[in-house]
Amino acid sequence: MSALEEHGFLGREFLGWLAFHADTSGGEFDGFSIQLGGRCVLHALSGLVTDVTLKGGSPGTSPELRYALAGGLLPKQLDLRLEIAAKKKKDEPRVFTFSLSAELLDLSRVKLPALLTEEEDDQVEERLQLLAELDDAVQLAYTTFLADRSTPRWPKSTVPAFRAWLKEGVEAP
Image 1 (cartoon, helix red, strand yellow):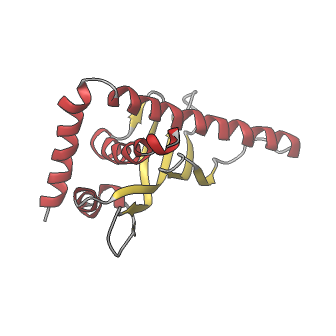
Image 2 (image 1 turned 45 degrees about the vertical axis):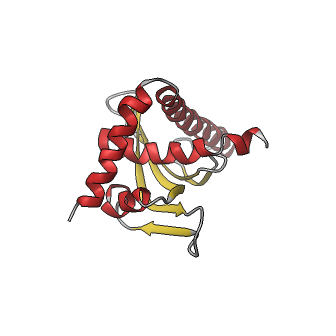
């Protein structure tokens, strides 16, 4: 068994934790925030239906997402919105939209913030810098998840809070 197969569950747990973190903590990290976008793809490990897609204005905060997760469906892919705070007061925050897959934590369907430069060569460099900035933010979110996941706090605090969040979503009218 490869290391990827051995630790593949971490990507699914990360996406579940990210949905939980976005809904309960505003998705806040150091210098940026992550919110769920308009699409969540969930996967069943067995049964006749293997994938379920939730679409809409905010499926990440919907009871349907928590009901599906509580029922055993696993996050496969999430559409996300990442906002990086402006460095100067006069600047606008940078907003990225993208899809994140649980399998390899692959980014797809990336939409970058508007480019500031007009020269074609500079635009290529700016795009690469923006992609690196997005990648760094996703890596920081994943590192934050792993730090929580690998401490005694995980089973004592995070898992019970996650279960309560799921239960609250299932019991919602």
